[in-house]
Amino acid sequence: MTNPVTKCSLYALALFGVLFSSSFFYAQESGFDVVFYSTRDGAANS
Amino acid sequence: MNADGSHQMRVTNDTANDTDPDPSPSGNQIVFTVRPTPTSNTNIFLRDQHGTVRNLTSSTSNNGWARWSPDGRHIVFESDRDGGVYEIYVMDLNYPEELPRQVTYPPTPNRFPSWSPDGRYIVLRHGIDVAVVNADGGTPVPLTQEASTSFAQMPSWSPNGNYIAFMSFRNGYCSVFRMDANGDNQIELTPNPDPAHQTWCSRAPAWSSEGQRILFMSARPSTSGQNQIFVMRPDGSHLHQLTTDGGNGSPRARLDE
Image (tube, rainbow over all chains, first blue to last red; front, side):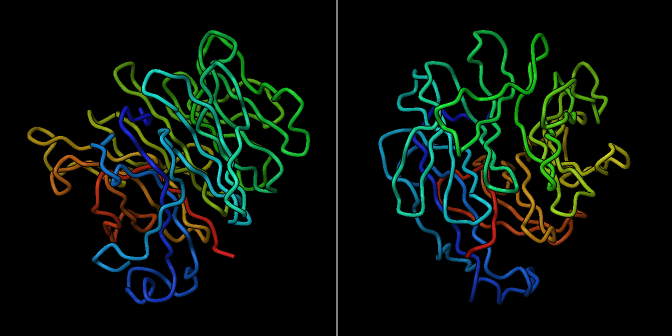
Protein backbone atom coordinates (compact mmCIF):
# COMPACT_ATOMS: atom_id res chain seq x y z
CA MET A 1 0.00 0.00 0.00
CA THR A 2 2.91 2.29 0.59
CA ASN A 3 5.05 1.10 -2.28
CA PRO A 4 4.56 3.56 -5.08
CA VAL A 5 5.24 2.46 -8.61
CA THR A 6 6.70 5.82 -9.53
CA LYS A 7 9.99 7.41 -8.65
CA CYS A 8 10.33 8.60 -5.06
CA SER A 9 13.24 10.11 -3.20
CA LEU A 10 13.64 10.90 0.47
CA TYR A 11 13.38 14.41 1.82
CA ALA A 12 13.67 15.99 5.24
CA LEU A 13 11.89 18.89 6.84
CA ALA A 14 14.02 20.96 9.17
CA LEU A 15 11.46 21.93 11.74
CA PHE A 16 13.36 24.43 13.79
CA GLY A 17 13.91 28.12 14.08
CA VAL A 18 11.45 30.04 11.99
CA LEU A 19 9.40 26.95 11.30
CA PHE A 20 8.45 26.78 14.95
CA SER A 21 7.46 30.39 15.19
CA SER A 22 4.08 29.16 14.00
CA SER A 23 1.65 28.74 16.85
CA PHE A 24 0.75 25.18 15.98
CA PHE A 25 3.97 23.78 17.43
CA TYR A 26 4.97 23.91 21.06
CA ALA A 27 8.28 25.61 21.69
CA GLN A 28 9.77 22.56 23.35
CA GLU A 29 9.33 20.61 20.16
CA SER A 30 11.62 22.86 18.18
CA GLY A 31 14.50 20.99 16.64
CA PHE A 32 12.63 18.08 15.05
CA ASP A 33 13.42 16.73 11.68
CA VAL A 34 10.74 15.01 9.67
CA VAL A 35 11.79 12.59 6.94
CA PHE A 36 9.42 11.45 4.23
CA TYR A 37 9.33 10.26 0.63
CA SER A 38 8.40 12.52 -2.21
CA THR A 39 7.73 12.37 -5.94
CA ARG A 40 8.53 16.06 -6.33
CA ASP A 41 11.54 15.41 -8.50
CA GLY A 42 9.39 14.85 -11.54
CA ALA A 43 7.36 11.69 -10.99
CA ALA A 44 3.65 11.30 -10.48
CA ASN A 45 2.10 10.67 -7.11
CA SER A 46 2.39 7.26 -5.50
CA MET B 1 6.67 25.56 8.56
CA ASN B 2 6.84 28.28 6.02
CA ALA B 3 3.87 28.32 3.71
CA ASP B 4 6.18 28.36 0.71
CA GLY B 5 7.53 24.91 1.57
CA SER B 6 11.05 26.11 2.31
CA HIS B 7 13.40 24.33 4.73
CA GLN B 8 12.89 21.03 2.91
CA MET B 9 15.97 19.24 1.69
CA ARG B 10 16.58 16.18 -0.43
CA VAL B 11 18.24 13.27 1.39
CA THR B 12 18.64 10.63 -1.33
CA ASN B 13 19.47 11.18 -4.97
CA ASP B 14 19.56 7.98 -6.98
CA THR B 15 17.64 6.22 -9.73
CA ALA B 16 15.78 3.86 -7.37
CA ASN B 17 12.45 4.26 -5.66
CA ASP B 18 13.19 5.24 -2.04
CA THR B 19 10.29 5.07 0.44
CA ASP B 20 9.29 4.59 4.07
CA PRO B 21 12.29 6.20 5.82
CA ASP B 22 12.98 6.05 9.56
CA PRO B 23 15.62 8.23 11.24
CA SER B 24 17.79 6.68 13.96
CA PRO B 25 17.24 7.68 17.60
CA SER B 26 20.36 9.85 17.35
CA GLY B 27 18.85 11.47 14.26
CA ASN B 28 21.94 11.17 12.09
CA GLN B 29 21.17 7.95 10.18
CA ILE B 30 18.19 6.83 8.13
CA VAL B 31 16.96 3.39 7.11
CA PHE B 32 14.59 3.17 4.16
CA THR B 33 13.10 0.85 1.54
CA VAL B 34 14.63 0.75 -1.95
CA ARG B 35 13.06 -0.60 -5.13
CA PRO B 36 15.61 -0.19 -7.94
CA THR B 37 13.07 -0.66 -10.77
CA PRO B 38 9.27 -0.96 -10.81
CA THR B 39 9.51 -4.73 -11.26
CA SER B 40 12.34 -5.52 -8.85
CA ASN B 41 12.17 -6.60 -5.21
CA THR B 42 12.73 -4.26 -2.29
CA ASN B 43 15.64 -4.12 0.15
CA ILE B 44 16.43 -2.04 3.22
CA PHE B 45 19.24 0.47 2.95
CA LEU B 46 20.98 2.59 5.56
CA ARG B 47 22.24 6.12 5.00
CA ASP B 48 24.84 6.95 7.65
CA GLN B 49 25.86 10.31 9.10
CA HIS B 50 28.41 10.76 6.31
CA GLY B 51 25.89 10.21 3.55
CA THR B 52 27.20 6.76 2.70
CA VAL B 53 24.44 4.35 1.68
CA ARG B 54 24.62 0.56 2.06
CA ASN B 55 22.25 -2.37 1.60
CA LEU B 56 21.33 -4.01 4.91
CA THR B 57 19.32 -6.95 3.56
CA SER B 58 20.80 -7.78 0.12
CA SER B 59 18.02 -10.27 -0.48
CA THR B 60 16.12 -11.48 -3.53
CA SER B 61 12.93 -11.30 -1.46
CA ASN B 62 10.98 -8.19 -0.47
CA ASN B 63 12.12 -6.37 2.66
CA GLY B 64 10.72 -3.10 3.97
CA TRP B 65 9.06 -0.91 6.61
CA ALA B 66 12.28 -0.77 8.68
CA ARG B 67 12.12 0.79 12.14
CA TRP B 68 14.99 1.51 14.57
CA SER B 69 14.78 0.08 18.07
CA PRO B 70 14.76 2.75 20.79
CA ASP B 71 18.38 1.91 21.72
CA GLY B 72 19.49 2.21 18.09
CA ARG B 73 20.96 -1.31 18.03
CA HIS B 74 18.29 -3.21 16.12
CA ILE B 75 16.09 -2.84 13.06
CA VAL B 76 12.69 -4.49 12.87
CA PHE B 77 11.29 -5.03 9.37
CA GLU B 78 8.84 -7.05 7.27
CA SER B 79 9.97 -9.63 4.74
CA ASP B 80 8.57 -12.39 2.54
CA ARG B 81 11.98 -14.09 2.46
CA ASP B 82 10.55 -17.46 3.40
CA GLY B 83 8.66 -17.49 0.13
CA GLY B 84 5.25 -17.17 1.67
CA VAL B 85 3.47 -14.38 3.48
CA TYR B 86 5.16 -11.38 5.02
CA GLU B 87 6.55 -11.96 8.51
CA ILE B 88 8.52 -9.83 10.99
CA TYR B 89 12.29 -10.00 11.50
CA VAL B 90 14.84 -8.18 13.67
CA MET B 91 18.45 -7.57 12.67
CA ASP B 92 21.26 -6.67 15.07
CA LEU B 93 23.29 -3.82 13.62
CA ASN B 94 26.29 -4.87 15.73
CA TYR B 95 26.32 -8.27 13.99
CA PRO B 96 25.28 -7.58 10.39
CA GLU B 97 26.73 -10.88 9.24
CA GLU B 98 24.16 -12.82 11.25
CA LEU B 99 20.79 -13.79 9.82
CA PRO B 100 17.92 -11.65 11.11
CA ARG B 101 15.92 -13.14 13.98
CA GLN B 102 12.36 -14.14 13.03
CA VAL B 103 9.70 -12.72 15.38
CA THR B 104 6.43 -13.96 13.81
CA TYR B 105 5.54 -17.07 11.83
CA PRO B 106 3.03 -18.19 9.18
CA PRO B 107 0.30 -18.76 8.31
CA THR B 108 -0.96 -15.31 9.36
CA PRO B 109 0.77 -12.48 7.51
CA ASN B 110 2.40 -9.84 9.71
CA ARG B 111 3.46 -6.42 8.43
CA PHE B 112 4.20 -2.79 9.37
CA PRO B 113 6.13 -3.35 12.63
CA SER B 114 6.96 -0.62 15.13
CA TRP B 115 8.67 -0.74 18.55
CA SER B 116 7.25 0.10 21.93
CA PRO B 117 9.24 2.95 23.51
CA ASP B 118 10.87 0.54 26.00
CA GLY B 119 11.87 -1.86 23.20
CA ARG B 120 10.13 -4.83 24.82
CA TYR B 121 7.24 -5.14 22.37
CA ILE B 122 6.50 -4.77 18.69
CA VAL B 123 3.15 -3.52 17.45
CA LEU B 124 2.21 -4.63 13.93
CA ARG B 125 -0.51 -5.60 11.50
CA HIS B 126 -1.48 -9.23 12.22
CA GLY B 127 -3.92 -10.48 9.62
CA ILE B 128 -6.50 -7.67 9.41
CA ASP B 129 -5.89 -6.34 12.94
CA VAL B 130 -3.32 -4.30 14.80
CA ALA B 131 -1.66 -6.56 17.36
CA VAL B 132 1.24 -6.57 19.82
CA VAL B 133 3.93 -9.23 20.20
CA ASN B 134 6.89 -9.67 22.50
CA ALA B 135 10.02 -8.41 20.75
CA ASP B 136 11.65 -11.78 21.46
CA GLY B 137 8.90 -13.49 19.49
CA GLY B 138 5.60 -15.17 20.24
CA THR B 139 1.98 -15.05 19.24
CA PRO B 140 0.65 -11.57 18.40
CA VAL B 141 -2.28 -10.45 20.57
CA PRO B 142 -4.87 -8.41 18.61
CA LEU B 143 -5.72 -4.95 19.88
CA THR B 144 -8.40 -4.22 17.26
CA GLN B 145 -11.37 -6.30 16.14
CA GLU B 146 -11.81 -5.33 12.50
CA ALA B 147 -14.77 -6.65 10.52
CA SER B 148 -13.98 -8.87 7.54
CA THR B 149 -14.58 -5.91 5.23
CA SER B 150 -11.98 -3.81 7.06
CA PHE B 151 -8.34 -3.91 8.11
CA ALA B 152 -6.04 -1.99 10.46
CA GLN B 153 -2.35 -1.41 9.97
CA MET B 154 0.64 0.95 10.23
CA PRO B 155 0.58 1.26 14.04
CA SER B 156 2.87 3.68 15.84
CA TRP B 157 3.45 3.72 19.62
CA SER B 158 3.45 7.08 21.39
CA PRO B 159 6.74 8.09 23.06
CA ASN B 160 5.20 7.86 26.56
CA GLY B 161 3.90 4.35 25.83
CA ASN B 162 0.28 5.22 26.59
CA TYR B 163 -1.20 5.28 23.07
CA ILE B 164 -0.98 3.65 19.66
CA ALA B 165 -1.91 5.53 16.50
CA PHE B 166 -2.91 3.40 13.50
CA MET B 167 -4.89 3.32 10.27
CA SER B 168 -8.22 1.54 9.89
CA PHE B 169 -10.67 1.04 7.04
CA ARG B 170 -13.58 0.33 9.43
CA ASN B 171 -15.64 3.32 8.27
CA GLY B 172 -15.28 2.57 4.58
CA TYR B 173 -12.19 4.67 3.95
CA CYS B 174 -8.70 4.71 5.42
CA SER B 175 -8.42 6.98 8.41
CA VAL B 176 -6.07 7.58 11.34
CA PHE B 177 -7.21 6.32 14.74
CA ARG B 178 -5.75 6.44 18.24
CA MET B 179 -6.25 3.91 21.05
CA ASP B 180 -4.86 3.19 24.49
CA ALA B 181 -1.90 0.82 24.38
CA ASN B 182 -4.15 -2.01 25.62
CA GLY B 183 -6.65 -1.44 22.77
CA ASP B 184 -9.23 0.53 24.76
CA ASN B 185 -10.83 3.83 23.77
CA GLN B 186 -10.38 3.68 19.99
CA ILE B 187 -11.23 7.04 18.41
CA GLU B 188 -11.08 8.29 14.83
CA LEU B 189 -8.87 11.35 14.37
CA THR B 190 -9.34 12.05 10.65
CA PRO B 191 -13.02 11.49 9.79
CA ASN B 192 -14.18 12.00 6.23
CA PRO B 193 -16.73 14.84 6.36
CA ASP B 194 -18.58 13.53 3.29
CA PRO B 195 -17.87 9.80 2.81
CA ALA B 196 -20.75 9.36 0.34
CA HIS B 197 -19.33 11.81 -2.16
CA GLN B 198 -15.57 12.16 -1.76
CA THR B 199 -12.51 9.97 -1.59
CA TRP B 200 -10.41 10.19 1.53
CA CYS B 201 -7.36 8.31 2.72
CA SER B 202 -5.32 9.21 5.82
CA ARG B 203 -2.66 6.75 6.95
CA ALA B 204 0.91 6.07 8.16
CA PRO B 205 0.66 8.00 11.44
CA ALA B 206 3.89 8.86 13.30
CA TRP B 207 4.37 10.64 16.60
CA SER B 208 6.59 13.64 17.13
CA SER B 209 9.42 12.90 19.53
CA GLU B 210 7.72 14.55 22.49
CA GLY B 211 4.38 12.99 21.63
CA GLN B 212 2.65 16.33 21.22
CA ARG B 213 1.82 15.84 17.54
CA ILE B 214 0.88 13.10 15.08
CA LEU B 215 2.19 13.32 11.53
CA PHE B 216 0.43 11.37 8.77
CA MET B 217 -0.08 11.24 5.01
CA SER B 218 -3.43 11.99 3.45
CA ALA B 219 -5.09 12.23 0.05
CA ARG B 220 -8.30 14.28 0.16
CA PRO B 221 -10.17 16.79 -2.00
CA SER B 222 -8.10 19.68 -0.68
CA THR B 223 -4.93 18.00 -1.96
CA SER B 224 -6.50 17.17 -5.35
CA GLY B 225 -6.07 13.50 -4.58
CA GLN B 226 -2.31 13.82 -4.06
CA ASN B 227 -0.77 12.35 -0.93
CA GLN B 228 0.49 15.14 1.32
CA ILE B 229 1.89 15.26 4.83
CA PHE B 230 -0.21 16.69 7.64
CA VAL B 231 0.32 17.23 11.34
CA MET B 232 -2.27 17.42 14.12
CA ARG B 233 -2.52 17.23 17.87
CA PRO B 234 -3.18 13.74 19.31
CA ASP B 235 -6.87 14.58 19.65
CA GLY B 236 -7.14 15.40 15.94
CA SER B 237 -7.32 19.15 16.41
CA HIS B 238 -5.06 21.86 14.96
CA LEU B 239 -4.67 20.14 11.58
CA HIS B 240 -1.98 21.64 9.37
CA GLN B 241 -0.65 20.61 5.95
CA LEU B 242 3.17 20.51 5.77
CA THR B 243 3.83 19.70 2.10
CA THR B 244 2.41 20.80 -1.25
CA ASP B 245 5.05 19.94 -3.87
CA GLY B 246 4.48 16.59 -5.63
CA GLY B 247 3.21 13.58 -3.73
CA ASN B 248 4.59 13.06 -0.23
CA GLY B 249 4.24 10.25 2.29
CA SER B 250 5.41 8.09 5.20
CA PRO B 251 6.57 10.87 7.57
CA ARG B 252 8.73 10.03 10.56
CA ALA B 253 10.15 12.42 13.17
CA ARG B 254 13.15 12.44 15.47
CA LEU B 255 14.97 15.02 17.52
CA ASP B 256 17.54 16.90 15.50
CA GLU B 257 20.95 16.61 17.16
